[in-house]
Image 1 (cartoon, helix red, strand yellow):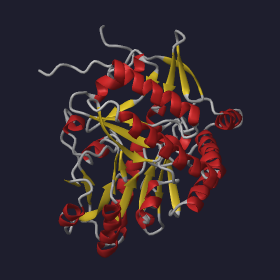
Image 2 (tube, rainbow, N blue to C red):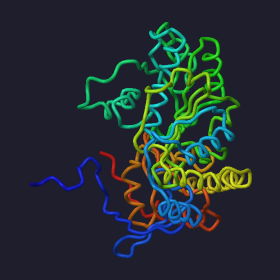
Image 3 (cartoon, helix red, strand yellow):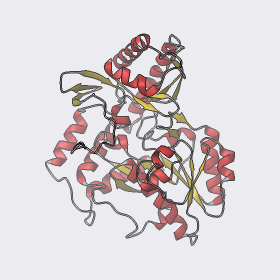
Image 4 (tube, rainbow, N blue to C red):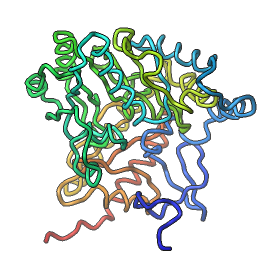
Length: 397
């Protein structure tokens, strides 16, 4: 037998963390890394945050799981809190981002069934997007690397260029149910949508009675400096998928919707065994305790601006390696030149004690815990700059 006990679907690197504290991870042999990947935007309060840890410990000692066949005081309280904080009127809790997007897709389609238009099934999605790894979510993305070996894909998705309002409008036909879009593409290279684009999609949905479904799995939960990124575009969606930071490291996702959008989501249309169980809800509530207030959100904005400014100043010293800085809040990316591959550089940085993550468009993603301070920024930029100085750019072929 040659296959590994863990199914080999990840090219796992030699980094093997066994402990975390704040913005740092520690390896089984005593290694230390500054973690500016945060589990790909999951550990938004860093590692071993006292309030989150205690909430999970206390709930685990009380009640971890019961079936969704029973009443859920914990789920009702967390859902009400999200309703009070957002555009939404109702919430379905899931365990992951992909599940949240699945629920968003189903909600958008069921809306039109409830309106007597079951032929409206197609969602217009955008190139270079990433929505998850289930059959529906890979079908919603145009990336061949996600499709390879899993055909036939599910029908009902039309792909157009991201941030191209004219193309989005041209794709609307009698089968269109709505749009599914990331306000800030994460895996696609930290690409924020323009104000014109997002407001234009909202207007098209209003004009054609379509659903605007936002995938804020990566950019949501305070990551961009507002609780959800849509707030910075002056719009409200009909449906929103959330996860990652929502549990601060515990698997929690949510699909938020208006009453109108959820018109078709009635008894029997959707479900989850684990979604919204008491332990997950304790984690969700603890995260919201910390991040859902003006003081914390202002900290994210200020810290994000400070980090961005430091990066922009630093990359000027390495013009052969870095092109530009992009993103919002503490969801930032550094675009590499064509002389350097972002994935190779991220591997180099791991050996220097710095954890980042690669993205599309040859971008290095910078996704630190949201509660970092000036000392972390200084350490990060100094380490990144020193590593860049020592990096040997491959000779041109």
